[in-house]
Image (cartoon, rainbow, N blue to C red):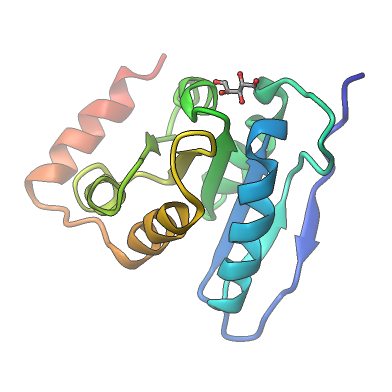
Length: 160
Ligand code: RB5
């Protein structure tokens, strides 16, 4: 049975660090639940676009709600079993730069060099602590601009 994504807004904190929007399929549910609590403790406003149960669902159904929030200025986190399906799907949207990361260095470079606006994680491929480390690195790093600006502009022009 297909579940309809329902956006759940969790906590609008005064002086928040910004909005983080999450979604996962069943293969990424556990880490989504874990990471969003941690990110809330770090001071982010959280939007959870599903999935909300362990029922098997199709990851493409959970990408667009996150993309819409990211194109309005939030940062996104997509999680599935491998991270592959979520990253392939998210990168089809113009203006989206979704980076599938398995360690802190990749997560940092994704922000610094690629101005990635969505972090993608594979729950079945990395440990929970590693997932937290990736999220922390992604959120702490900033786009360096300079020569990377031109390259990111060219990336965005590749989108159909
Ligand atoms: C679901 O079994 C799995 O295919 C999905 O979570 C993801 O890994 C797809 O790329």
